[in-house]
Length: 548
Ligand code: FAD
Image (tube, rainbow, N blue to C red; front, side, top):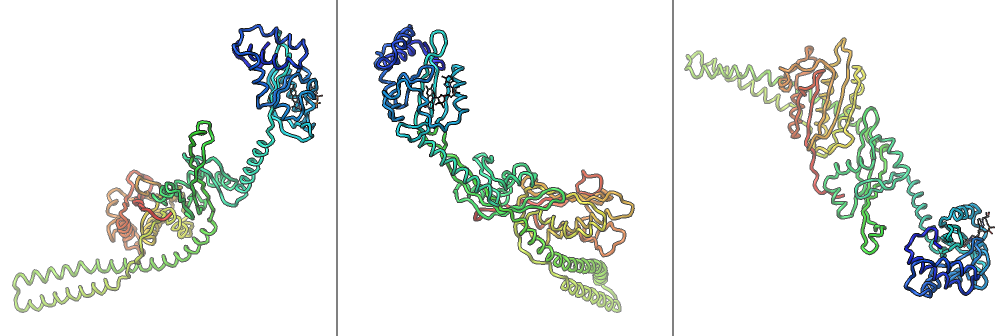
């Protein structure tokens, strides 16, 4: 005889069967005992049968043995205490007497199909105790086969799991409640594990996956936070203090407006639930990232800033053209004054005649008058705006300039390809000055392309991280700048424009000076052949520990 689903050594089986015989002896029919004794044709166990009987009898699990009709032949003490039935009342009765009659018929059908296939069935049934109360039984039934492989008995083992089930249900209910609350929240949540993989998110977060088009939004946001917070990000993580209200900007290619999020992050630990961690608790660290979209407010603020900027830029343009005009006049005046001074010096050194002394005097007078005039001009030069250096997002400045120049771009029929890096580290700089640089470059590009019969009029603006710097490319499809002029164009008062309407050739000189002041670089990309491509680089700002 063997238990269908349990393979063990003959020795163990023999012992097990002896135990069963001992257990059944008081109540089972003689035929059953004889069958079992015949089956005990195996290597003997060294333990007396009584040990097996007591093992089953004293087991904390409710154990029963039935015939193939599920009529009880034997039940242990735990069975009596779980069901409330004394042994005498259940021997010979069908196990169905335990049914509370609420278990779906399909469960029993599946159970009996499994047993008919001589396999062990495990599942949960709603049972009724003798006193009429119900309990949830976790049950396992195994067929015991005879020497011909036919089912001779069933071995049933069950325990009351009502309390455990209640706890499980409570935990599940709480989990569902939390998930519903998180899902309904109007902000995006993502729970990140130690490797920054999203292990839990909510509905708002899932929407971002499609909307932003940058792959995993959390990875993008964390990269942007690292770029903008610098060391403060790691400090917030290591100290466990977290961070709050960190604004990040998400730029998207093409005509899609940037999105803004106010982000908070908090780190917490939970205990590993694996068996390995049972005696040696292991902690796992998680980060809860909360992203609150503030694009609408930011767009309104941007609108207001742009209209203020328009008037600032108009004033700046006026002052700039005045500066250029005065600088041009000084430049033009300096030449003749130098000549007159040289002539006066020459005459003075030669030891001139008495009548020529008067001429030397007049020349010196002229030089002095010229210098005074130049001083007056220098004094009337409008001062450069004095603004403080702040951390800047180059994408933001370029986008603002593009918006400000939209009318001019449209009028010249120029199409724009705007390809910002989704995440850019901040640059320390003076916003108005840098805006002027970008405005100058874009205006140069418009002017270069705005000539009759030019079919292709495309302006491409691209930003990208370049090591410890931020790179900017402003590229047009105009005639380009001949190689021999590529250095000259940065000189003051140099211009290639035929109709010099208002342009004093100071634009690129001014741009270079501002870029130099920002420890940056501006050059004409020699690799580019179709039109002109300006390449600029600005070192990224290293933010020290700022409050997270
Ligand atoms: P039943 O009239 O007993 O049968 C329902 C369906 O099951 C029928 O359609 C029939 O096709 C099938 N069926 C019944 N008996 C057999 C059989 N011998 N062979 C093949 N198909 C059969 N039930 C509980 O509710 N609680 C328990 O704790 C429990 N413990 C059990 C322990 C053991 C070891 C075994 C063998 C069975 C146990 N059962 C238990 C099942 C029980 O015997 C009943 O099948 C079940 O309770 C349904 O009872 P019923 O009166 O509603 O339907």
